[in-house]
Length: 596
Image (tube, rainbow, N blue to C red; front, side, top):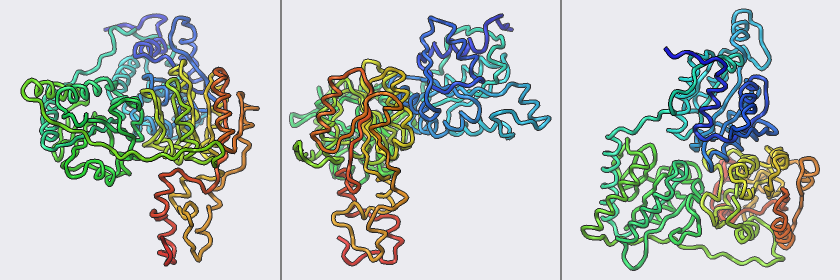
């Protein structure tokens, strides 16, 4: 039996495995229950792991999420219950959107736990409910381990980290404080990952053959590049597939192109010549794009959230391939991994070229006509994002928040691969500002540019203090319209119509008071948190500040962008005239005689 090594502790083992899988960044809020692990890392001057503190746990969680999206596994350290409870929202978002975050929760000692059970004594940060923290996180992680024994710790650590790397989703560790410094064995070999069974490759081959047959049966095709191309590092493989198809199988009229969605925006640089645009992928948009003679091939794409309007778009003319299996029309290949499927598609099209190249033709989107903006035009969502689109460079990474910023940002052209970050499925407001912290930690040579509404900014504005403390040059544009705009739109869009419907109930004519926000002097927040604050009220002022930011590559900025309360992004403006709010349906005067 392998014996523990004197002076090699559970904290040493944890550190060794974190370094092995490439963790070089930890975010969190200090607590004595995790201090032994942090001390072990700090004691090794050669360790690549950098420990950063954050203003609060939520800022830490969102920063770790954004970092892991772009760079690989990141880690969070918190203390029992009071710290961990705050992270349920952030870890759930990472779970839904397949982000490999490691949550390390320090727990009371085994002795304290036993006293609590037997004597009913509550220690600090405990509720008296047994194992409350781990029960809370099990539904939103792919592995959750409670480590109370040094002899078992290596096996628990290895199995959970293997799950993290395989599923690309969060894992949870709850470690008793007295276990960190207990002796244990050292890692005897590299972390083992299970290899896919041969049936997986076989199913991938079958799915690829079925996909090729479907594409050959219709004259036109278009690909939907999904978020899993980024999550599993398959962007180059996807481009290789398009290269094989377009080199050997397309007719002179045009190559087969690809689109992205809100969740996968910028998985391929939007300057790529085969990029068609970023779309919502609602059933009506799919029907418009594909028509009666086209095929939509989704690779690594999810039918969730802002990607499809929460609807299933499968049909006889769609292929939806993801890590969880491949749908080709009505057929389903459950064991095919995305990596194997893409490689099998490349092999199938390469083999087909040796026999008889097929005449495939690409589908095209109708490109919207963008109106130019003069320097004295009204400052609103559309003019802001049009200006931002011209200002962003290849060394910028744009992070946007849920609501109107996410909707408006779909028109912004992202010039670099992985140059756009948004929580487009979980949609927690407040994500983007601390995400900017994680982005800059992941890519120190890039500049994080955040666009957030003032309501979401209220949630996590403390992240600006983190950015200044880290010496980052992050830019936060706060689109301040004074209301929770997206919430008002969902319940009652009437204030955003032009003109509004004339109701007998005047309450439906205006923004509800509970959607009004406290009036903050947002640009002044840097006086407390650090950095440069600016406020702009028209386009000429916005462009002047943008120019100032470009000439100042060292400071962090918060720019308060004043937006009229009734202004909305173009997509919302169009929908508002036909959308029906929840309160409108419930109103006895619905439908009004003069509606539209």
